[in-house]
Image (cartoon, rainbow, N blue to C red; front, top):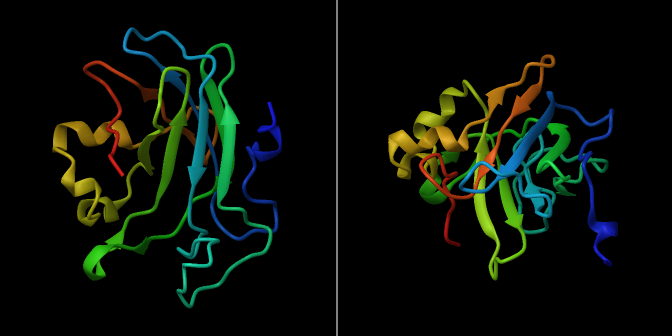
Amino acid sequence: IGLDRLNCADLAPADVPGERIVLDGRVLDGDGVPVPDAVIEIWQANSFGKYDHPEDRQDKPTHTGFKGYGRVATDDEGRFCFRTIKPGPVPGPRGSTQAPHLVVSVFMRGLLKRLVTRMYFPGDAEQAHDPILTRVVPERRATLVAKEGSANKGSLRWDIILQGPQETVFFDF
């Protein structure tokens, strides 16, 4: 109640430059049961690698129609979907560059603190040098990388698994 005005599944109108993507997935508990009452929030840079935030002082193009922020509730089957563009690489710590990614927060019943993770794009060579992703043990990195969807070009699939052997990597911030 009162949060509906913050919901946004479409981050980039048609005139925003960039590669169009549709990200869909599910939030699942440790037994593979869908979580029907989670809220998924994403933050991202634009296709040039600039955030729509006053603290991003990079000399890169912006676009007034691009939000860089989205929020949706999961449905009864734990599904969520965002329509956006692939972000560009952004600056990282100590002069490094971060591979294109989405910052993802998960809010749900029973959590006193949100879960924070990232979603990376399949086949992106820049991941090999990403200062955050390379801190994750190699056998767990796949939980942070979306898979090509079956629908059409730009379709991505990424599930958030809350517990168990295939648990998505979450970060403490």
